[in-house]
Image 1 (cartoon, rainbow, N blue to C red):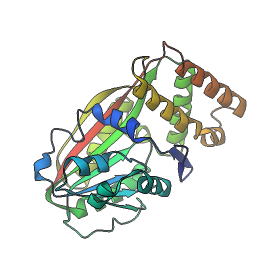
Image 2 (cartoon, helix red, strand yellow):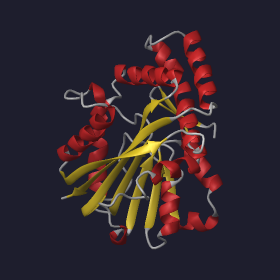
Image 3 (tube, rainbow, N blue to C red):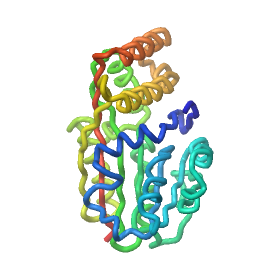
Amino acid sequence: MDRTHAGEQLSYSIPEPEELQHLYRAQHGLLPPEIDVRRLKRVLHLSYGDLAWAPALARAHPSISVVALFASPQALAACWQQLDLATLRRLSIAEIDLGGAIPFSADFFDLVHLFLMGPLLHPAAWPALLHECRRVLRPRGQINIVAVLIGPSSSAAYQSLRSLAAAAWQALGYSFASVEGGGGGLFVDCGVHLCHLLRQQGFGQVRYRLYPVDLGGWNNPTGRACSRRLLQDLALQKALVLAQGGCDEVTYAMLLTEAERDLDAEAFCASGALISVTARKR
């Protein structure tokens, strides 16, 4: 899907449901083991453009009332187009400004589920969002933040593009690595800082899990499609990288061409991680 979401200098494509399902399979299901689905009655799902998780939960558990709020208007439109009427009757969907208030009363949801495939907010803006998540949760309700991070690959060009985008995000203050106390590595820093932010907002039972994700391999077409999606998102960061002086336009175009060629090679392989952070409202 070629639709994009443009937030403050950041653009992302809208993943296909099959690609998202591949990522969620890394944690062996829609929810981590810390969350008992039998205790859920009302669930809120927040994302830029995750078209897979909320419909899957609504289909698997018809007794649960599921609300999906998208930061991307294109994702909202795609959701209306893709879902059948039976699923739409079980699911409420709308657009949201993640920098503002969540439009529900306090103590309403049993679970808030948040998914991101790239920088969502500056670290300084996260406390306000998490405060809102805590407000709409019922006492003893849980939050689950799921983040996908790109890992190493066999393509030198892919690696270079990943490094250029990460440097640009960090220069603009979108990276947790720019927060004081970082240095444990990309995957660990993200999990640790999200846990720290949740504790600051008064959540308890805070923990995170790391799940490896296969993003390549000739016998893994869906994983390779995820890598192609991530490469498309890296292509959308070109203006950002050029504005930060990461490289020139010709070099970026050459890297994209080389990375696309590498993705078609039989020997291509890539990996990443799914970080699943859970916490409970005290």
